[in-house]
Image (cartoon, rainbow, N blue to C red):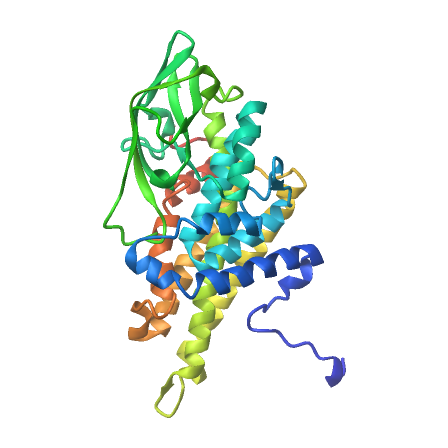
Length: 393
């Protein structure tokens, strides 16, 4: 190879992963990246500090086309799983709360209606949700039923042609701002899903405050006090835990990509800082200790991106198993946490301020490692697939 044709790795795409993406995938990625750079990054530190996220951001994300973008019809973009994953990566490079808004809307609330709902429910809700004109939430987790959703206490009983729901849901993203809640309840016929519109008598919410993680996100408790719903509020196709678990698998897939977006943002911040911070007359980037940290972070970001891309290709081919998604979430969130913590050290005291994104991502990832299945549960899912023995049952 001559000097003129010598290949040199780029710090921000060290393994040339962009070359594995189609022109359409790159275009979608770049549009979302530009949106995040313009609309999220300049403001998200303030949102995090204030514990809020603008309600109007949902409509902007709808206009961008990322809400339910991997679903077909009803105003949804019908994009590939890989394209959706790339969007999640860019959104979470901005903030986990923004990606959570999109994940809960598209992969939980909208997917539940799209996969398990009636045609009338799809026609009524999906176009509104895709446009961001309405916001959805997903009520599965309860105070005493997180990793074991089968232990849920929320119940629904028939009363004539109506249903009566009673119970409590906890840690619900978008809960108090949602126009419709997809609520899962135990019935005499199995676990069923119900669409509960905002303002329904007996349905109230209260936000969870004093969070130190996912602050740029609405997290709520749902209270259902003998809520009466008509028969057409029932998701007719879901009759067991397979319904909500299928939705969770969709959301976990997005996290496989999203976590690496947070990791990339931390790595890039540390890389820039190391080149600007002068200590003992030279940038800390010129020291062996910091180069070793940067190399480790770059390795994890590139390895995690390749893993996400591989799972995306499997999903697009219809060959992605749930336990493979579990491995992806387990590996990439753990890797992202390691990158964030290392980046925090590179930035020194500056690493704990919201002037830089690192501590915000680091705190957010402490939630991401827990929600949509804890790291422990995903390890057991993988372990069960490897051994044939389900240790948590």
